[in-house]
Image (cartoon, rainbow, N blue to C red):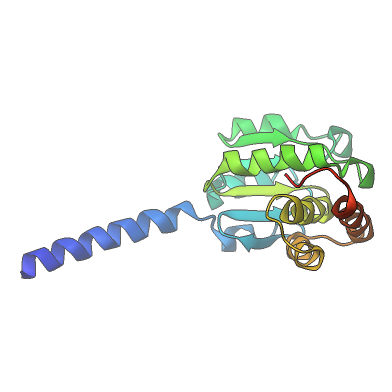
Amino acid sequence: MHRLLLLWLALALSVSVSVAAAAPEEAAMTGLSHVAFPAPHRVASGRLQAGDIATLKRAGIRQVIDLSLDSETPGFDEAVAVRAAGIGYHNLPIRGAGDLTRARVAQFDRLLRDAGDQPTLVHCASSNRVGAMIALRAALIDDRSTEAALAEGRRWGLKSLEPAVRERLQAWSTSPEPRM
C-alpha cells in the first residue's frame, strides 16, 4: 500500500512538472513591450526587437503570431530571426481598422487553434491590434456579448481600435451573415 502511494505521488509530480514546463515563463518576459499574460499558454505584447527573440526562447515560447506589417520593422526581419531560434512564426498583417474583417478573424482563429496549448506570443506594435482581433474573435467565434468581447480585448491590449471594434460588432450583429 505504501509503495502504491509513493508510485502515485511520483506520477502526479511528474505530470505536474511536465504541465508546468509547457507554460511560458512570465518572469522572463516582463521586459517585453506592452506585455500581458491574458490566458493560459498565451502572451500578448507590442513590437519585438532583435534582442527579444532569445528571451522568447528562454521563456518557452513555441509559436509567434505577428499582426504587424513587415514595413513596421524595416531593419529587422522578425520571421527569419524567430524561425532561426526554432520558434514557429506566422504573420497575419493587420494595418488597422480596415483589416478588421470576418475573414481576418477566421484566419486569426485558425492560427490560435493550430497553436493549441503551445506557449504562443501574439503581438503587433502596441498590442492594440491583438486586442482588437481577440475581441472580434470572442464575439464571432465564442459568441460573447459585445461588452464581454470588448473586455476580453482590453485584457489583451485593445485601446484606440475599440470604437472600430464596437462598430463592427454592432453592424455584424444585425447582418444576415451567420456567426462563425
